[in-house]
Structure formats: structure tokens, C-alpha cells
Length: 254
View 1 (tube, rainbow, N blue to C red):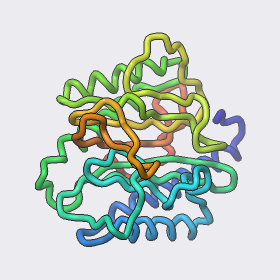
View 2: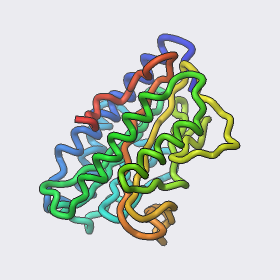
View 3: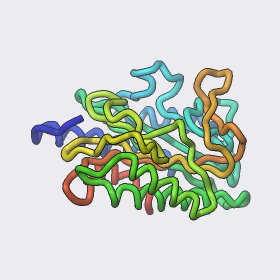
């Protein structure tokens, strides 16, 4: 959305702090032996305490308050009592919500406990790439150039990007224009970031795959060539200089 008043900025800051804090607390709450349903219910209670509503549930009827993807699930993992967290699991939590008519989105991948499967390099690459991408976003910058930066940095780290998952505008709804802030460059895309707009920037960094495909449950996405995918996401306010990171309370870079 385009921020045109102080009240709109306050609204976006409030919901962004809510989803960021929820993500941070869910990450800390995750323990070996816990089901992803228990973890999701915990996050749902936090959102309710703030008076916020789960965006995927409200918008799409998603069967959970947040998307929790485990190991080879790339995105949109459904919380389940049957999915039990284990030592060394690669976990992604994506939290988005609505409060007082404003929407915000954030996510992060992490290794649970000891990194016995060597997932940390992929997690670290994703965090680093998101930071570098955001550092280079300001009003007037081409969206395609940020996509080129993300893919180039992924290649430098020995990884790939998922090409059919993307960042997006956010604010008065969960997905707004620009709808496809892709993780690679589409030369024909001449669209530019606009000052005073709020967007969700997401990295989708992978070991093997370049396309996410949907499983039979109608939600869960996995890589077309297997392997693992990490995602990190911040909602930001675009300015003439360094963006304002609205979801900084998630501490995904710490």
C-alpha cells in the first residue's frame, strides 16, 4: 500500500510488530517432541491476545494460524498433530495477520537444536541475501534488479532460488501490487519500487530445486527436484534511502 498519512504508518507499524513478535516467540517456543499443531496454536493465541487475525486463515481458509514447513517442505506447510519436531529439523514459520484493517507478513527458517544435517549454511545464506536485498531497495530501483541481486548472491553461495514464489505488496490486504517481487531478474519487468509503499520482501533459497510444486493436500509446496528451501521475509517501508524494516521485532537476523 501507499502510506499517505501518519495514522496509516502507525497502523502498519502496529500489525508489523505483532507478526514480528509472534514469529520470534514461536521460534523460541519450538522444542523437540512438539507437534507443529501445538506450535501453531501457541502462535494463534499470541495473535488473539493482540486482537489480530491470521491472514492465511482469514484470506484463504488455510487450516492453521501460520504456515509451518518442515525439512523438504518449501512453503505453506499445514500444522498437524502428526508432525513431530525432531533434533536438527529445518523449520520455516511464516506469520501474517490483520489488525484494524492493516496487514503485515514475515517469516524465517531455522535449525531446531543441533545442526546435525548441515542446514545452517542454507539458513545463513538466506538471511544474508535478504539483508543485502533490503539494503539495496529504495524508491526508483527496479524490482528486476533486486531479483538479479538475490539470484546472483544465491549462486555465489552455491545455491539456487525458487522462481515461482515471490515477495509482494502488503498493507490493506495480504497480497497487493506489486504482486511479483521475484528472486530472479525478468528483464522485461520495468516496474520500480515506489517511495512510501509497504512491501514484503522474501528470499526463497534452495539446494536443488528452482520451482515449487503443490502436494495433494492443496497447500504444501515442495521443490520440483527435491532438496531443501529456506525463506526469510520482512515487511518494509520503501524510502529514498535505507528502508524502514517494519517487522524488525522478529529478530530473524540475530
